[in-house]
Image (cartoon, rainbow, N blue to C red; front, side, top):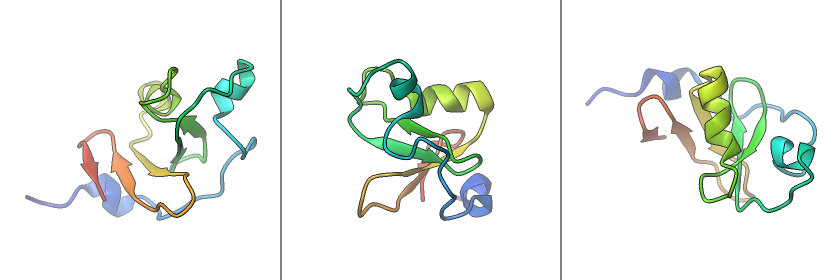
Amino acid sequence: MSACEDLVAAPRDIAPLPPEDGCADCLAQGRRDWVHLRLCLDCGHIGCCDFSPQRHATAHFHNTSHPVIRSYEPGEDWRWCFVHELMG
């Protein structure tokens, strides 16, 4: 199996967009019920994971086609490609 070109091309990290303390979309809706946070490695958007009620990280991918996120949880550095459904 060949490597995922999106994971290869994506940076390991990117500066997050404000607000940096939670899911941007949840906070805009007055919600704080996310489970885990994910950082878009194209634009820095912070969204909530698929275990969260609103699933904003996945919604961001569907709205923008930005393929790779990384965990925004302390101590975690894994990345995920939505297009190829691969972790890197």
